[in-house]
Image (cartoon, rainbow, N blue to C red; front, side, top):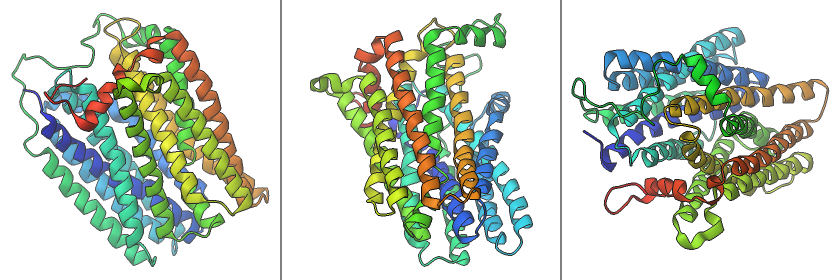
Amino acid sequence: MTLGWGGIVRLGLVQTALGAVVVLTTSTLNRVMVVEMAMPAMLPGALVALHYAVQMLRPRMGHGSDLGGRRTPWIIGGMALLCAGGLLAAIGTVWMAHSPRAGIALSLVAFVAIGAGVGAAGTSLLVLLAKQVDDARRPAAATLVWMMMILGFALTAGVTGRLLDPFSVERLLRVVAVTCGLAFVLACWAVRGVERRVPAGGPSHVLGGYPDKSTPFRAALAQVWAEPSARLFTLFVFMSMLAYSAQDLILEPFAGTVFAYTPGESTRLSGVQHGGVLLGMMAVAVCGSLRAAGRMASLKLWMTGGCLLSALALAGLVLGGLLADWPLRQNVFLLGFANGAFAVAAIAAMMRLAGCGGAGREGVRMGLWGAAQAIAFALGGFAGTVVFDLLRALSVPAGTAYATVFAGEALLFVVSAAMAVRIAGLDPAVTRDSAALGVIDAALIGHRHGQST
């Protein structure tokens, strides 16, 4: 009744398809709105924040799939809604050139559909993994699926970036339409026949087992929040992801405005960043799996070092904004590598800490950290664009305005690094235990007997 690695990889392709559509809407269309359509940077920031806000409905969507008993219809339906929203978002962006109000109105509808589609497909996919993946493989499967979504970001940004040059609105619509169509077909093929029926009354694989049903949700949440490690890790997730996401909506406009990148060049720059993220993740996984790595396998080292290296890379972007003569591609690759390293180390620490503080509350802890990440992503992108627009309204030069936002992100990463040190102090196993990193390595290369580390 459990999935092998072949089935897990197929489900990972759903995340790849999902990431392919999302990166176009949050990256490419963002740049086109700001540079080609001359709209305020706050607009795409608000639209992306809206798509994150809609994802607060994830629990309700998960409950709906529970009532139906099958996840495949929710995955396919969510992908259909996501792809339709992506195409509508492209049409709305093009409309902004001639009818800004109509274009913005259509974009609002589109990003609601995008958020609902991501929530429905993503939530049901995770539930399907949780119910049909063996306990020993579940952490590695979750990490593999997440990495395949990042792979979708990187591949789509690189390929579509080349297809968009020379830029025209007709070319933009064709590229988005083909990408959305291929993503939907890939997702439908990936889930076909993967879901298997669980016998009535049979076991339901849930992370960490079932909590005490006699405890109300608010009481369980209060118990988790009272745990020092859970509370501090929640703040760490929020702070680090706020810094991580604040540059999402300004990096490509920054490249276009300050460095005169074309839409295709700035889209390829996003591919460079996501490629760095993948290499950073793999570096942590490899070091965590090698016994000879010693201190290099420490979660504390990678969490703290990844945050500090991210701050250093952002400091480089500050100089780029002030000097307008800077190795931008190399700097962005370094930022991606640092972000990937700290993010995957944080995931490994999350797995380690989920079972701390008592059994039966793992889901509440993971949910709390997931909510912190969603709120941070919703606020981060929007806050970065708001600060930039305010500085521009005060007649601050564009390069200086971008540099100010990057400097604020760097400071947040420094604070996050200090929190990572405190988290390791509360749970020394995070400092010395490399086993959590081993499950990530298993997601990359597998185990010769098919079992996770």
